[in-house]
Structure formats: structure tokens, C-alpha cells
Image (cartoon, rainbow, N blue to C red; front, side, top):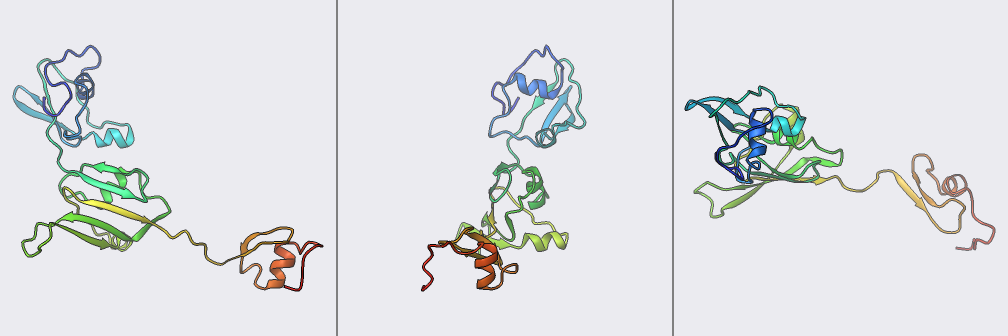
Length: 212
């Protein structure tokens, strides 16, 4: 029952577990929760399933077997938080109460080395009566939050965007033109023009015009 493609009674011919029931019903809809799927037996809640364990690791902890007339109920989504930018798996994630930025990064597979962590933009719906705007933007220092072991909470409708580091290489010098080996080299290895031309670029070609 609930937010599935084909709600109703289903006969399970394979393993009788909640995953098999979800497969038989066509899966959870985009409006359904993946974090709080409930199993009822004789009108009593006996188990709650968090499918994020299964999605992120391939394992389903604390799985149970279903019996005849059990009810698997998929409620509406708890929340929808968007993650975009320099992340491994951008998308819309569902967070439980008290879950925040650390959890959504773990769910997405972590951050790539190109992610800028000291400036992260979070767009949030503004519930304050003091503001004239419905949406506000804040920029947080996630790197500092990790060092201080503090949690950055998120709420339904938030949008998190990570920027990429600048594509600028430090300590480089380039040489092009009528030399044998043009290209980019480390400045500390070739600190003078003579070193760059004779050692890095392996000298000038015989037909080089040397007046300029």
C-alpha cells in the first residue's frame, strides 16, 4: 500500500520479504519514501525499513520474512534535498530528522578531490516572518565544520551546491615556439630563462630568428 506503482494484494512466488513485495508492486514512486517503509502484521507495526542501506551498500540490514496478509506500507517522502555541483553523485536525496550535510555527502559517495569545501552554498526556504523573501542563500565553511565535528542541518526543500576548485596550476611556466620541446614546466625546476630554453625546451632550432 501507499506510494508504489501498483498498490494492492500481491502473491509472492519468490522469497517473501519486503524487497520482493516492492518489486511485485512495481517499485516506489518518486513521491514515496525510501527511508521509512513500514511492515504491519495484524494491524501492528513490526518493522521499519531504510532502503538507503540497500541502495548505497547493496546490503539490507535487519531484513524480515513476510507472512500471509502482511502489509508493506510506503509513506510519502520525508524530505527532498537537492545536491549538485562538484559531487560524485548529484541528485535529490531524502533525509530523516536530525540528518544533515554529512549524511547526504555519504549517501552520494563522498566528495571528489576537486570539490571546494570552504565555500558551500545552501539555498533554503525562509520561514522567518522577519524577512520579505521566501528563499534565502547562505554560504558555509564545510571544511571548518568537519574539523570542529559540528553538524550542518538541512531541511525539506534545501538545495546544496558544491563549487569546484579553480583550474589554475601553481608554480608553472610555459615555453612555445621554435624550440625542440615546447610545453609547460615547473618554475622551481627551471627558474631562469636560460634554464627554461636550454634544459626544459632542449634548446632552439637552427632556423630560429634570435634578434627577437
